[in-house]
Length: 232
Ligand code: BV8
Image (cartoon, rainbow, N blue to C red; front, side):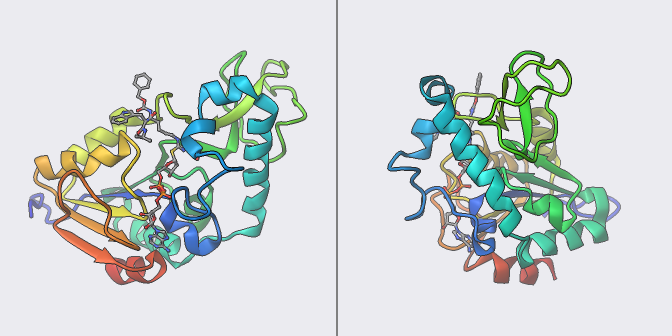
């Protein structure tokens, strides 16, 4: 494994819905992965929103409200502890739109698919933090227009932070994938990018995913047990 002269290790951790499963947040492609009989790919899209904005706003309002009844689990807390120990040598990239990494204390954190706790104004592009519902068409705090949508990246939309993520993946010594089925791109391609640039790759997942390139170290189990053990 490549180590910098300082001997310190740069780590990129990619997380998906599986890291929040033990907190009670449903995953996407498990048995609870359907939304009113629709696949997430069919409704979490601009077309889905244009076709039925009220239904999509209600879907995200319900998921935002549900955040009040869930809490970070041992996996989120272990990653926050790791950041406390190694600082900016660790970057957490999450596909999740929940706020559990944030509430556990992670700060070197990129929500590449956006956040339930943020809205986006279609009139002025502001991205205000948002706690309440959007179904009632509240006014944008910056421009006053009633054109707020969830600040969540839908299929076909550009994820956030891609340049910063790719720079970190290319430069890291260890790439760890936690709780993701590896079906959504560009996130699913990061393991191949990390491996191509010499990083050691690790998967901590309930069951092995089917990555484009095999992980150097694939451990099967619950994130709540595997992640604290790996961090220690
Ligand atoms: C883009 C927000 C470019 C919404 C989400 C290349 C090839 C093929 C397709 C594409 C490609 N490039 C782009 C695409 C299209 C598309 C895509 O990837 N489609 C897939 C379906 C094939 N990608 C995009 O559209 C992306 N945009 O690439 O833009 C571009 C370029 C130019 C101009 C414009 C655009 C945007 C994708 C983002 C979509 N938004 N989320 C919302 O959340 O409501 S994706 C959604 O899936 C969530 O973010 C979720 O996190 C993500 C991935 O799912 P997972 O997190 O992996 O969850 P899943 O349920 O699948 O798996 C859970 C895993 O956990 C399982 O493995 C399970 O075993 C494990 N597990 C369960 N319990 C536990 C556990 N593990 C440990 N412990 C446990 N207890």
